[in-house]
Length: 127
Image (tube, rainbow, N blue to C red; front, side, top):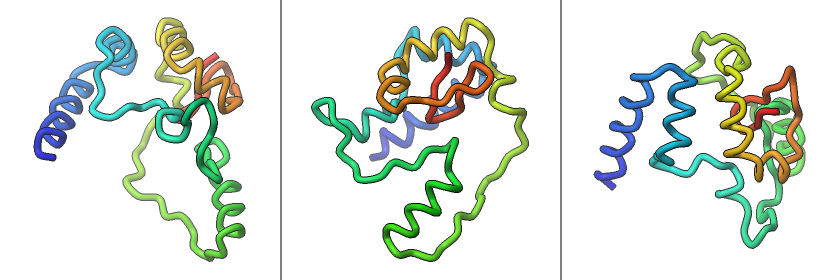
């Protein structure tokens, strides 16, 4: 467990030392991550989705409302660690769009991603 914490700290320090597009290229070239970041890694086995319900960031409010109804829970989502950021589309350049499109092509297809202004955010994909 300790080595995972240390690896995470090292990875975070590395990521913070680069701008977003440099990090995307570095990640692709070195395949470094403490944890797999492809959504399909966690919920697909033998080519099939093995979870009952998927909540997406791009439809978070509606998905959470639907899930609450399904499981009979009456709780709202709280926003924690909310930061001030530009819209995610502002961070990508043409090269990083191409890299992410290639790295996540399986997820793009599997989850039938929505394409908004050429980019879909975290948990999404890029056209």
